[in-house]
Image 1 (cartoon, helix red, strand yellow):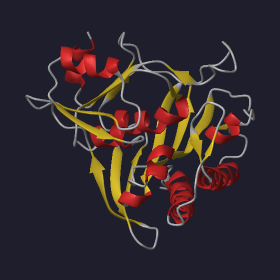
Image 2 (image 1 turned 90 degrees about the horizontal axis):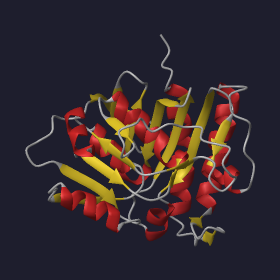
Image 3 (image 1 turned 120 degrees about the vertical axis):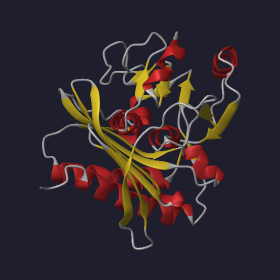
Length: 267
């Protein structure tokens, strides 16, 4: 039986290889109207992914970050893709290696499949809605040591991950009120992957993110047994449009957990 994630994995690997080649050339960023950086790598990786998805999934709309920034957003139906070709552009520019390539499939507002590639870390993570796996990326651009991935049971002192580039007092306060003492900072969607791989336990995020920032990570984490909810305990949903062009596909605050027993912390 064919692997439904294979086309997404292949597209992510090709996009990641192109982004890494640019990363090694130390290209300076440009700046978008909202103050966020963008590089040649964002655009090249996105073009590779868009071409691959159009070929493998004809007729399925794709919402991609750089296309959306340019005002090119397709009409979406119950089934569509969300793509962040280079999540963690600040990490890319800062050259700490913590950037990722993200592709997610959404069905009826739910992320049902996702792939995240961390090119500089040579790690890839994937989930198909029922199971998740991780693997190592070889120098030849193939996946080796593919193995199942599952969240871990919450330890007595859970480990939180928080944004390296976007810290917030709300996050610090949330963690302090729950006496979470062990906190690691990471860039990009790697934070979801660490929960899915059983290397950390919770990820609170307050402030603005976009759906393409979180969809693949949520798909992978929930495929590995975790949960992503709003502070009110509702599932984080996708395809949010209609309020205004500035808020289309915008997330509010969310809480990501490995062991679902930690959902009690959302109260």
